[in-house]
Length: 231
Image (cartoon, rainbow, N blue to C red; front, top):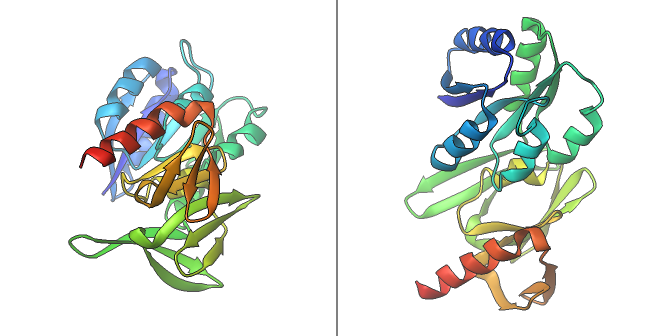
């Protein structure tokens, strides 16, 4: 089942999405709210696979909610305004729906959720892998072999012990498929915390590569490194 959340302060718009979601066999609507702060508290304690997120809301707007989530699920933005479309794609959203949302457009958006270039697989306990499409062919990459991932325009570079893979994907989407041993350190980087050999105030050393740490992620990066060192 795909666990769904809806965040929209317009009751009618929320009810329309709830009705559409009820028609999809593998959708489980877990939370539907018009209160952004309530949703922030909810998602900190609960897992979701997909969020329908309104942009114009009181207290926190949708873009602010999106920026606040360290490991966001897949997101489909909903709004009556089109001016946010360009900015929204900087955050790797699946789609951008203009209100009133028609059922045909809704179905087109959710089809994109299942066409990601990457999926997470588990062959057996303790053996987690990332499955990507590289040059049109499926490739399995073990989590432990990944050094770091770098954003490169509309692509990602996945650096492993043996080679680099270039795929068409976003950092936000791939983050949802990685384990807790991976952490975003910068708008353009995700690192494997287990592969860090040295840390300074401004960068991490992984093999012979310096990976930058931005101010936004510094506290959580060093906290996670500290926790790993205690294990």
